[in-house]
Image: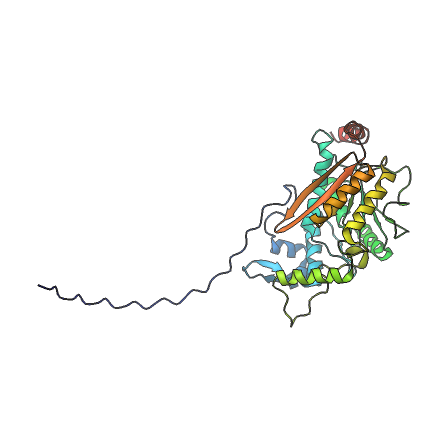
Amino acid sequence: MTAPNKPKAPRKKPKPATPAKAVEPREKASLHPRNRHQGRYDFPQLIKGCPELGRFVILNPYGKESIDFADPTAVRVFNRALLKAFYGIAHWDIPTDFLCPPVPGRADYVHFLADLLAEGNEGVIPRGAAVRVLDIGVGANCIYPLIGHSDYRWQFLGSDINATALAAAKAIVQSNGLNKAIGLRLQGNPKHILSGLLESTERFDLTMCNPPFHASLDEAQSGSRRKWRALGKADPKRKLPVLNFGGQAAELWCEGGEARFVTQLISESPQLSNQVLWFSTLVSKASNLPAIEAALKKAGALESKVVEMSQGQKQSRFVAWTFHSKAQQQAWAQQHWSAAQKAQG
């Protein structure tokens, strides 16, 4: 006997599709452990210290507070807020179209250099005015001296070939009462980097440098267009900055680009081999490392190292070299830092 057919259950109406939520990409927890810029920014707190930032805060595609990094004014004000909140810099501004650097990445360079000095000082980071740092190409933003003095109380000398940039940096230094901690000097010959810059009696524990990365204006502009496309901001209806983060000629490009600038810096460094403990420079392109290593060998560097860094998805590095043996490095530390460390207790 055939069983009677069971009545079919009524079909349920399909639920309306829920719009897919944007999933925020996970960033690598890769900032230096001492870097102050870990995690998300507290925008209400930043705005409290720098009210003008409130005009530029937006929600990004993931519903998080941020700013439009394609807006040069927003980036400049954001930097002003960060420097005030994290480093106590009450007054900071730069002329229009000068380089406005990303602060977290600049801070990483400073912290890794502190680790470099600690390696030759029994693992202790030397702090205070006994440590002197030369910032080659300090720029209008004066960013490395501001961070380095705030975090480690180091003394800085910033050099540049651009008198307008130095005037802007001087205004920052003076308005924050940092004249005794940060000095500035014009490199009078734009064809030279180190030659003719220092007095014979001056000594520096470190040099640092953010070299011009590009070989021409066209190359710099092309790099910015690629970045806007990668960030999804290349809207043809919107007038985007020609150069992301701004920048003048000497800040962004020079004949031969990064490779030529860095190899020239290396070739001039033996002139100051007894006056500087460690030389260093950022290197944006890993493809330039073989030429840089060859230049270091030719210059007679006794020790060199490549220190890799990463901020989120961005990979960067710096190269450091010295003409001092291990024994000479220890003697330098004893002579220049030990007395200051004992005085600090």
